[in-house]
Length: 304
Ligand code: DON
Image (cartoon, rainbow, N blue to C red):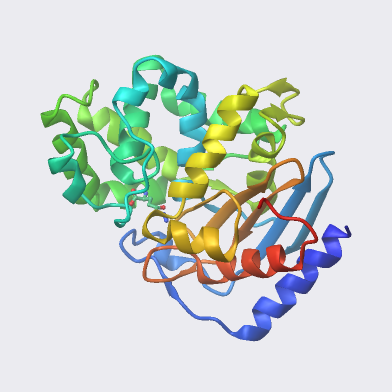
């Protein structure tokens, strides 16, 4: 399979379709990005990198970082954490608070904001300097020092963080939150404000395509069974109330972010990251999803 030719074909086809969406504007600093940027990077299991378009331009990874933070505490799920977060699709928007009340403060899954806040709370219990630990971990996954936190994006979100603050207080009222709310929110907004290119992002997801082993970090990041489970949660919950549609159209475990990025894996074949800032009404990138749909249509193999 000539991956370079494949992603170039996909890139051209998506560009010719002239798809439109809307850049996220509830984080004002993100609304300032050039909406016409579009890039794809694919990394195979040998570490070969293929790229097209704006694949080397760093962008705000936002909720894609929830996969990295989940990975950092995953082994704890075998004990206490699975009692704090579920693994069911929510069918609701990423920042919804509704289910949290009648499900007694246990978020449906680790990728909706409520669940990700619990994961970040667990990270704050585990590490003295969680932000450094998160960036060090992702740098290790890419084999280079590539991650930067965009302070303007972080501050912009902190200044408009009413919804996440409400979720954190709600979790605390159900005793599903151990650390001071401000501390956890700052770590959460910081990891959402990390910037990476499609190339870095695809490298950082490579271990999930490779039974938990990262060829860039040269070590087993998660056991084979835990890596499979992260992929299962991505497939069922990675796109919130659009998870079913993403599975139907694309058929890969993946995770989106409101910066317009999508990272996905084809287990035992490759990891891929696509970025285009314009989003659909569910907060997921229009062109990135279309690109992955075209790509899986053209492949001679599939997950199913
Ligand atoms: O907490 C938020 O609302 C953002 N920092 C992240 C949301 C996000 O990326 C949702 N994904 N599509």
